[in-house]
Image (cartoon, rainbow over all chains, first blue to last red; front, side):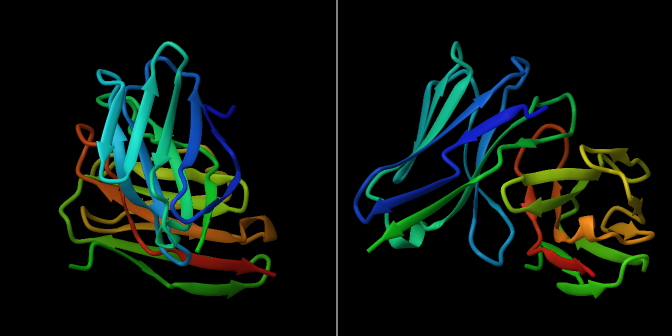
Length: 113
Length: 113
């Protein structure tokens, strides 16, 4: 049972464009939604995270939008750069409960110069 | 700042052989995790340890065993390797139940022939 569904599987964007990756979750008990960024040959690293008490969180060019009623959240990368080319994973968990962080299957982003 | 260190980085095994992947963290984290990453499958949790002295199964535990040797070290053992265990394995740690950020190692690429 896949608890976090991520789309698209791959995404190609031109430099300066907006990259959008979407995730949907099933478990309404989830209350922590991070995004991880992974470069080839490296382990994933936390990029940005949001909790359901806010609808949007922005850090630089990266923004998470959260829709609690639709059980969806998305990552927007503004002014995408070739250095943003990586695989992005959304995830979800319930703080204070299970130790498990459930990941989406990932989106491979390519930003062309 | 070593963070999470995994050894070995690469390993080739024959079907039926055994091996242990080692993981150590120097951040004084309570929780440690083993994930496997396969193309199109994202990150799947194999086992985790919420604290020293405890271990629990994740999503795909079959064919693996773990040992939380002490607070720093968490090893993953394949008793009788199978081709289906060919994957990239990531160890991760985080402070505890109250925070969500996972810190990953750089991965161990295992090929089972």
